[in-house]
Length: 450
Image 1 (spheres, rainbow, N blue to C red):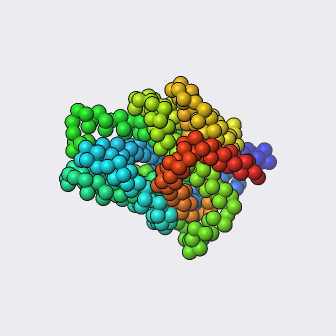
Image 2: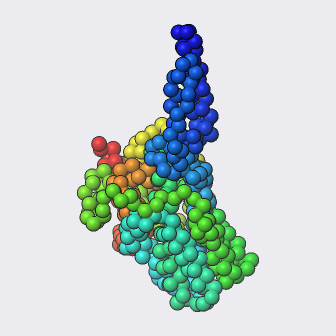
């Protein structure tokens, strides 16, 4: 009898494990609730509690993918965000080239063209923080969808209303709309996966933008030469429609509004800046953004002073773009072996050294090498800045932190040409390079400090 009783208990235990294992292997809870097996003689009787739907259970009690297919939607979110970002960024970069060439064809002065380019960053410089707070408050899907629609409208305006005045409205709207999309995209990318996955995720997103940064100007150049400005604006307006459709249908698992128990944002940006770790990231981000914008602005001027042709200056700039693409391919490997601040420290020192050497070279090959080196340094830094930002930002204020970063970037894009252009006009380009190199080296020591 004792042996039979023990055998019954063993059979009951094995039966229980089979009952629980099969549904769990499918990634969901069984609709049959917990089963209590009560020994009665040598056999086992079943006592069942009423079925409880998975929807009524706490999230902690649910197995993976038990939440209405969210696992499948989340797995496709990052690749989709990269593709949507490429389409919208292609529209942005393509519109910059198209607007500038169209304005020149209408007889606009270089000052007017510079003003149009500055308008891409002027409104985002002031409104990015508010956009970040909005993404925290209402979720990212709505702002991203509004951004896609705004890019399309801004791109089609010159097609509907030809002429110079409409370009001021178009550039302002495109810049503001892309900022809305970008804040939401970076917020969503940081929310995907574990913290250890963030450097890789942001590297892949930045890699996509490297592709669109190359294809946008190239594509519109071909369209302008073989079609017309009007057709080019129409094609640019079509690019954001696919992202808008994806976002409108809700096909992606995107961060929703801030949880009810998250801290309020009434204290404003000053509260974020009082966090010394966040402040450190913002300062480093500002230095890196300054270095990036200065290269774009001053290399054509420096090359022209050396007597280089436009095509050779383009080759030097292309070396920088190629380096950012190459280093972002390697970023998943780099992120597994080095901490964020280690990469940022190295990037600042290398970029500072490259800027210090620029005034000493006057031929194409060395300039290409320095430009490529600078691209490696600056291209490796952006994913690490975004990873740190998402790790340090207070709960429920990720969008606001991203907005502060976007404000810093747009302020740099707007102010660097004005400030360093004035310095270069008075003392020459060489001292500007040395001044920036010293600032970046100082930033390297600042980033290395614990």
